[in-house]
Length: 330
Ligand code: TXA
Ligand code: MG
Image 1: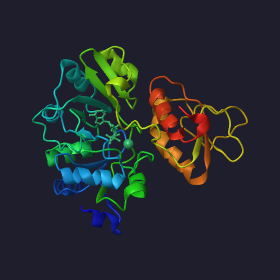
Image 2: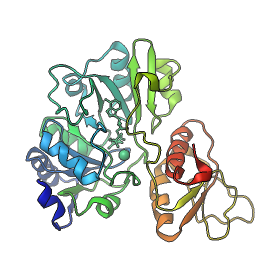
Image 3: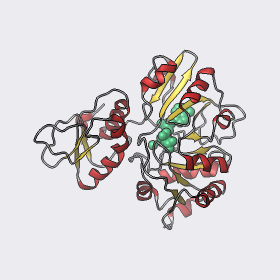
C-alpha cells in the first residue's frame, strides 16, 4: 500500500466471519502484504506479515502511530517463537504455563530472526506472544510467519474489543476485519521481560501479577535508567475524548458515572463495570463502556477500583486515559 492509496478514500473494510474460507482469505491478504484486523482474547489486533517491511510500515501509517514504537509478534506455537527469540529456562517456563494466553514476553532477538527491523524498531529484543483465539492461531499457521499486531485502533484511542469497534476506528484504512466475537479478556496482554536476575513487568495487563509471580518471584518495575521500558507506555494512551475523573463515589452534574460494584445508595450509575465487583468482568467491559459513555458525555466519573489482581491493569489504563485532565496527573 503506498501513501497515495492511504490518503485516497477507500471502501470500508469488509467484515468476515471465522469460517475456513474467510480465514484462508485473511491469510492470503496478509501474505500479499495487506492489513487484517484479527480477534484475540485480549483486544483486536491489526495484523501484518512481520517479515514484510512494507506491510509493517502500513500498520504504523494506518494507526497514525509513532514509528519508534515496537510491535508484538504473534506466533502460532512455541516453535515459531523460538525461531525468533532466545528463550531462557524461565522464559520457556512462562510460555509453557501461560501460552496460548495474555502474556507477552520481551526476549533477546535471535540473529537469524526473520522479523523486519521496523517491527522491533531496531531493538535487540523482540516481543512475542501466542494469542488464545482459534481463528487467529489458524490464520498465523496458514501464513506460516509471525504476525506483527498492535491493538487495532488509531494511536492513543481506546483499544477495540469488538469487530464493530475496529470498523469504527480503522474501517476506512484497512482491508479486512475477522469478526471473532467480543474479546474475552478485554485488556491488552501483560508484558514481561524475564532476565537473569528476575523478571520485569513492562506493562500490567490481562494476566494478573500474582499468577506470574508464582513462577518468577517478585516482578520488578521497569528500570528507566537502563531504558528497559515498553515505549508504548506513553502516559496519555488508551484515552477516550471525554474527561475522566477517577476514584469518584458519585457523579457531579453533567457527568456520566461508571460504577464498579454495588453503587452507593441514591446513586444511579450510567453503566456498571461489574455489579458483582468482579475485576475480570470489569476488564472485559472497560473499553466498550468507556467508548459508549464517550458518545454521550464530555465527562465521565469512574468509581474506585481496588488495585489488586486485574485491578492493577484496569487502574493503569484509567490513569492513562485521564492523563490529559490536570487534576488526574500521574
Ligand atoms: O494484548 C495485546 O498485547 C495486543 C493484542 C493485539 O495482542 N497487542 C498490543 O500491542 O497491545 P501494542 O503494539 O498496542 O502494544 C505493544 C507493547 C507496546 O507498549 C510496545 O512498546 C511494547 O509492547 N514492546 C514491543 N516490543 C518491545 C520490546 N522489544 N521491548 C520493550 N517493549 C516492547
Ligand atoms: Mg495499543
